[in-house]
Length: 441
Image (tube, rainbow, N blue to C red; front, side, top):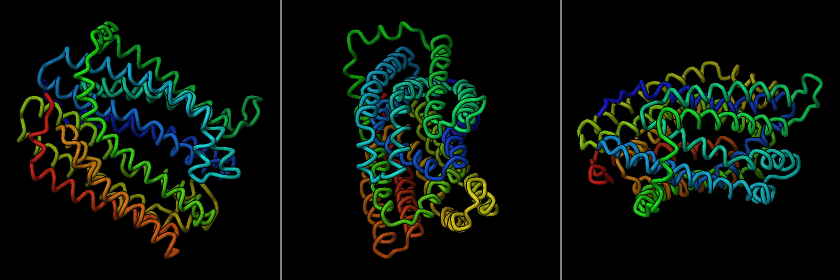
């Protein structure tokens, strides 16, 4: 088995993740020059997207585990069959979800509490971006396949191109350059969709030229029902955890929409866009660690897998802490990028201080849960999510933000408590070594 190195895998994933986040960051930043509520509406629409697209994580997460373990066990044909199944599923499911978002997008937004201008703007965004979400599904599937073959730089280059296209079109469409009308939120939605179309086409060409062959879809005849069972066994618990997280955030957003001031709502949107850059390297380290753990577990190298996770976690914590401290040091300036509103800047500067504790817990979860998944241990993180997200995060946010009237401060305190508690539980699970009996290959 080819030895995989953490940072050789992680840095392209970091760049790719950062650029994907920049796609959303650019949308919000450009819209902040157009209308603060328009910028907030994109955040609301993306929360709705995260709920309905959770089905994609069932197959993408499970296929990542199975492909890495099969490659570690040197079973290349089995890995290719899983890749074909993943792409086919994402395309079919993506078409169904695109239809749902086009037909009932505004109803979903109304359900989560969007109203007035936010509902109007978010509805425009969701009808266009949601209609093309099947492309994002296929794009994500192909990226997972390429990454688990150790070629993380390829999808990074594609994302660079997508980011350039999206940002350029954002500026042109939203601000109405070259004689075009100012399209606002609709312009952002069109720019996002066009960049995803371009990215999907390019990544498909690269995948079937350098990694797999189009003939892999012939492996789906006869249909591999055993692979489907394995995917569901891995994917459903993992997707449930992600679903519960996104649903809890949706419930919290619905609650706080009625109790936070307009300044606090705008602050929440801007702070979330800033803090994405505090934990993106932890996301990259987590994904790289999952690939390595899968390969090591597939090759039955359990002791090295154990040590690798702890090394990855230590590196991620150090990097996240450095990013948080930088953010705290320049917190007023960071908020000033988005707005000149002094109240929003003041609130954001305070929340960024509280966020340091949240990021320590989040980093622990991003890395250790990824390693547990790579080893095939998927049920324990889901059980912890059910307990912590709903009793600590949702209930805590309601009590602190709504009942005690602490507003955005209470909200962030509850979110931080949830992340930290789950982080402690994940570390305990890894050190117990019970994941060593969970591999699938």
